[in-house]
Every structure is written in structure tokens, then in C-alpha cells.
Image 1 (cartoon, helix red, strand yellow):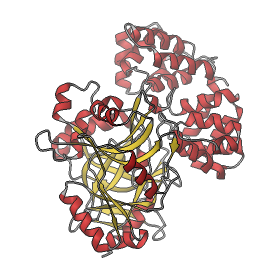
Image 2: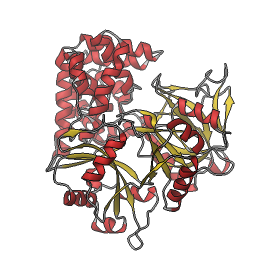
Image 3: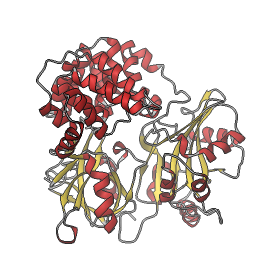
Length: 572
């Protein structure tokens, strides 16, 4: 396929009036591709040349890309760097600055060149990246160059979610969007859309044969929520409850020689936990996949510290001083693979028994505290004990529940502490817009438009305006630094909003929000028409709690969860 045709598809998708239209456009484009190019197109749709968990980044800042553009244009470097800075979007500037041409690039050539740029490392790599990028841009049409430059600088965001790509692949090669669950299962076990694209070309049997692999992250199972202990007991009956620790959830893979650590966003964060891996190597030498909560403990008392302390490890180079100041303890709660056996289809009771036989104690490792509860009173007592121990609450698990990769369901239920006069749980919402501040907040953002996630439509639906809970530092420094790179002139295609904020954002940043209650609203689109015709749901008295960098936008609170919280907020 010519790269020009691929770029034309991207433009059509960006202008699509609905997700169904988007799916049909993508399916048509996939069918036009030679089979070997389908996985490449899927990667380029994500603005990548490899799955995210491989950690292969372009390493090209916008200033370096501007220098490459200057080289391609044969113009003064400083002039182009300044012009791009003033324009605010290197792609938009390239559309204006490059001479009209038909291009002539192929999708395969562009992918290969971008991959070479990403893989180039070591002394002199920046100069080599710049020269290769300049050659690529020089042979491109303005539209092609805009896509290439936005891709290498991480600014290509089309509003195409993973679920939409999977649905388009199902339609293109299985002839039925309804067969998306087959692809979804393969994706949940491998976290690799390009790999799924290769498999779907082989047919349904290849998709059904997919098994998890050590080294490839399994998309993590998520818990549902219920308002209180009575409802949890009613839903689950007698069950196992585990402490819910206030740390970072990690998935650790070991092939007998090498370790991989993945975050719940599927990022490779192996370098952040050398001490945890050292402990695991001491206690187990055979291949495994496990999940644990990595919690920072006090170096003197051993007490658990809040989640924010884990963030101090999110640096490029961990020093011995940081490791000593923020020591980690791993609370292991799931064993997905061990001794050559895949365990995810086994019931929880069996997985836990296997984990307890497999586990060996270590000063940096501990099994999650669990208890079998048969009554509401037992559950409440165990919950109180978890809070006293410094935990967030409990995760309640059905004894016969399997591990459903990538899914949220009632086989696991969260039970967190509520505060008088507030909802029993916080919500994780995605920032999609903002209103500019006035008075004391002039020059920054006054309030943020926050959205829940609708997995059925693969879009973000507004739930509230959040203006309280932010410190002066948040308003003046942190929010602009976090949000400005994602500003848009127009609403993102995956956002449904009836409100018109001053500024739109890519749906990327996730924040935790607390509120007093959930009410009906004609202004917000969350669960619009589901509870009452012509009305959605909204938060009353929302307040910012913290940033949730550990969560992807698709892990935000779902519309179904919001509806359940609305119905259950007065229960008990």
C-alpha cells in the first residue's frame, strides 16, 4: 500500500461521524493491504513500531524533529525550530512549509525507516536519527510528512481505541464485527495488537489457540465495586477476601534467566524494582508469572507508606540512595503460570492453594493476607482489620472464579473505606477538557471536564467539572505540564460531550475524584438516557484526590459502574 493511501485513511477516520463508520473505514483499509503489511498498519495506527511493552521509543523530541524538517527544507535550523515552537504542532507547520508533491512512499518503507530510527542508539545516534528522518520527510508529501513527524514526536493521536481496531480486524478478515471477542481474548493474553492482526489472517483456529507467554504481559483482571458488605455477601456468598494494598500493581515474568516487570498500563518497568527482583530470584529459580502489589515501607519501622511514595521510583536511573529511602515489599496475590502450567483458567481457590505451596518467605516478599468469610459480620471485621493494618480495604474473590484477563467483573469485588457524607468509593476519571481560570486562577485552568469510559462504544462520556482539591502548585505548574502537550483545537473523536469547554484535551490523563453523590443531569453524557430519558449522570461536589498515572484511560471508571454507584449510593 502507498503511504499516501494510508494517510488518507487516517484523515477519513479522524473525520468519522461515529465509531461504526470508523470501524468500516478501517476494515476496508485493512482488506486493501497485503497480508504482511496489516500488522505494520496496526502499529502505525497506534503511533508505534512495536508493542508498548517492548519499550521501543523513537527518542526524538520536537526540537530534534524540527531540525530534521529544516534539513529536509534546506532552511535555517534556528528559524524552523522557532517557527514550529510558535505554531505549537510540528505536523501543522509541515503542512504549510513543505512544497506540494505526490510523495511516493510505501507503508513498508515508512515503517522500516521509523523502526530504524527507534532502534538507533549510542554515540552519535541523535544526528543519525535526524538525518534519516530528514531524508524520509524530504521524499514525502506535506500530508505524509505531517503524519511521520507527529508519529516520531508522540503527537499522532487519532482517537482509535484498541477495541475499535479489534472490531475492524474482525469485520475485515472474519466478516463479522460480532467475532471481536475472539480477537479480544487473544489480545488480553498477549497485549500485542500487531500479533493479533497476524493471527486473524490465519483464521479463527489460530486465535483460539493463543496461550499466554512468559515475557508478554497479560492484561490485568479488574474488580467491580458494590456499595457495602451486605451487597458483597449477597453477590458472592461465602468467599475469600484479601487485603487491598496501597501500592503499585505489578505483573512479574521470569523465564528462568530474565525478569520482566509490567505495570497495569503494560509498561515495562523492570528497572524500577531491582530489589524486588533480587528477592524473587533468591526464592524461585523456575519460570513463573505472578502478580503482586509493590508497596513502599518505612526503612525504620517497616510500616506501609501510601501509594505516592512509589512514584519516587519512577526515574530513569534509580540510585542506591533512592532504593534505601524507598524500600519495596512485594505482596504476592496471584500466580498465573508456574512449573510449565498455565493457571488462569483454574478457579481462584486452586490458584491460591498453588501459590501458597509455590511461595517461599523472604523479608521483601509476603503473600497477601486473606481470609475466608461466610457472614457480613466476618467481612466487616476483616475489613476493619485491613484498614488498621494500613490498607485501602479488601478485594473479595469468588472461590470458583477463574482469572479473566483484561476484564472487569463480579468475580472480584472491591470493598473500600467510605467517608461520612460521601460516596463509598472514589472514581477514576479521564480529563477531556478545561475552562480557563479567572481571578486567583487567571492564567491557568479553573476547572477540568472529566469523563468516565464507555467500553461498549469505546468512548469517553462526561461526568463532572472538577475545580476543587488542587493545590497552588497543581494549578500553576503540575496541570499545565501534564495537560498542555495534549491540547486540541477540537473535541477528540472518542469524547462525547454536550458541554463546550475553553480547551479540549486528548483523553490521556487519569485522576482520582471523590464526590458527595451522583445526580441526574441534562448536561453530562455519562449513561445518557440509561436512568432517565434525556438525562445523564453527574457528580455533586467533586474533589480531586490524586493523579493515577498507573491507570490507562480505558481503565477509568465505566458507565456501568457509575450507574451501579448511582443506584446503590443510599444502600445501607
